[in-house]
Image (cartoon, rainbow, N blue to C red):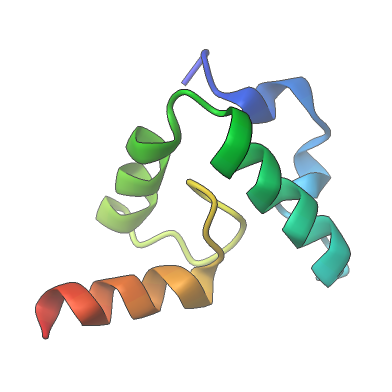
Length: 72
């Protein structure tokens, strides 16, 4: 994922240790508006059941909901 936009930012933005919702929103915005590998990142998170962080513009709760929707 060398082309991932997140590599240009502090990793704490995607894995905020304090769970700050403002930080999470900023990370999601970067993913959704600037990242050229967003879909691949999201697929990685879904395939590997990532339980932490923002991946492909989604947090863990959003990824769970997406998985439920796909299996329904």
